[in-house]
Amino acid sequence: MELRHLRYFMAVAEEQNFTRAAKQLFIAQPPLTRAIKQLEEEIGVELFIRKSRGLELTTGGRYFLEQARQILDKVNATVNDTRRIAQHRKTVFSIGFVPSVFYGQLPLMVRRLRRNKNLEIVLHELKTREQVDALKAGKIDIGFGRIRIEDPDVDQELLFDEPMIAAIPAGNPLTHHRPSMKELSAWPMITFPSGPGPNFSDLTQGLFHRRGLRLNVIQQVNDLQTALSLVASDMGFTLVPEQVRRLHREGVEYMPLDDDNITVPVIACRRRGENPNAVMRLANTILDGLVENRLTGRYP
Image 1 (cartoon, one colour):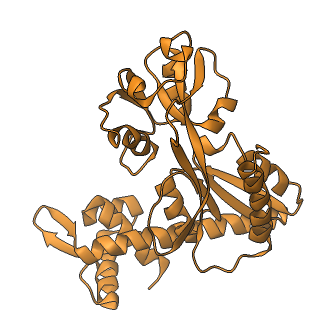
Image 2: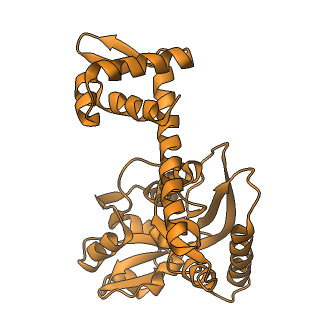
C-alpha cells in the first residue's frame, strides 16, 4: 500500500464518483478504478458499494476513511515540521487550545517555552474534539480544552476547575448585584461555539438544565470575541470562565455568580502511552508550576 492509494481513496470517498475523483486528482479514470480495486484486494474488504447513481462507503470504508485522514494528516504534519526544523534548526512544539484558556496561564507557558532558543512554538486554535483528532494525527503535541472526550489514544488530565462568571451588558440591572442562575435564565442568552457538540455551549446550557431552568438562547456564535460583541450590543448575556475577565471590553461587565460551585474544567490532552521527550518534560514542569500557582491563589 502506498500513500497515493490513501489519497486516491479519500478523493473517491469525498466525490462518491470515480469520474469526478479522477478529475480532482488529474488522472484518468481507469488507473484510479484499478488502484481502488487493488486497495480493496490488499485489505481484503470492500470499501465501496457500487450503485447506479454513484458510490457509497461500506461500514469498513467509513472506518478506513477516518484512519486514512489521520495517517495523511500525520504525514503532512511530519513533512511540514521537517522542513521547518531543517530551515531553522529548531524543535517544533505544537499546542492546541480553546480561546477561553488563553487569558490565564497558557500565555505564560508559551513565553517560558520560547526562552529556549532551540524551540519553535506553534499554536493552533482548536475545539476540544479537534484537539483529540490533532493529537492522534500528530498535528499537535499537547492540547488545552474544556470538554471531557473519551478516546483510547488520548489522556485527559484535569488541571483545575475554574469559576464561571457572567458577561452582562453594562448598565443592565443584573450588574447591580451577584446574579443567580435563576435570574440569568430570565434574560436572553448568547452561547458559543455553534456547531455540533460536545462543546462549551453544551456545558454552559447544561448548568441551567440541571437546575431545572429553561433558557432563551437567542444566538449561537462561533467564538468568544463575537459573543462578547453581542453582549456589548445589549443582545443578552453569556457565561465565560473567570480568566476571561482579563479581556477588557467596553460595554461588558463581568459579574461573579451568586450560586456556589459553578465551575468549568481546564483539561490538558496528551497522546496516551508516549514517553515524554525533553521538550514535553519541560512543558510539563512549567505547567505544573503554573497550576500550583493557580490552586494556591497565586494567580495566574
